[in-house]
Length: 113
Length: 113
Image (cartoon, rainbow over all chains, first blue to last red):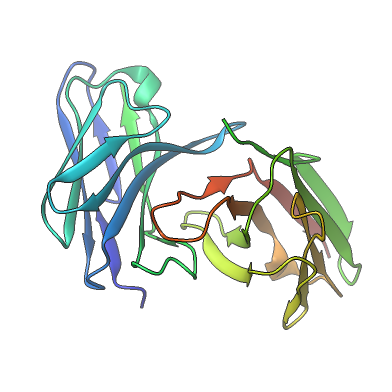
């Protein structure tokens, strides 16, 4: 397999609660990304990381924070979940050469009620 | 920012037919990629293209890197039911993994038996 796993696969949470999604890779890749996928919008970049403790914002970063304390783990946190954050979240990784595009995880379906 | 245009949003074809999709941009890309997403899963890389004019095949799939570097095409021949899914194009304007991919919004393909 590709060596990237996301957890949990499904989650239902209440508005206003904090939520953390985890992306774990065993490829030792430098770059990691968090996307959300919504009908009509395709994949939109939330945050990305280019190394341990090095992160930056994507196009839809409001309401989200990330942390990367180890190469293998990239965490996405919704500080106070809102219904507009109901979505499918994908993590992706790529190595230093980047020649082969991104490898995606299987996604986390998050529902905020 | 840069955008990749894919249309129409949905395509419906009969099993056994060929189908072509294209992806266009207003700016130049140096790498073009095509992904397929099955229901409930993350996108999976189908074909990667690195040179203008390049034509690459992967089984029944053929993709081309447009000579203007502003477009790419994907052709699926003799479609089968398992071709159902969302097809994304993606492009990278510069070489190097620190240049992030831009994704199209995807085309949902349905195949009628």
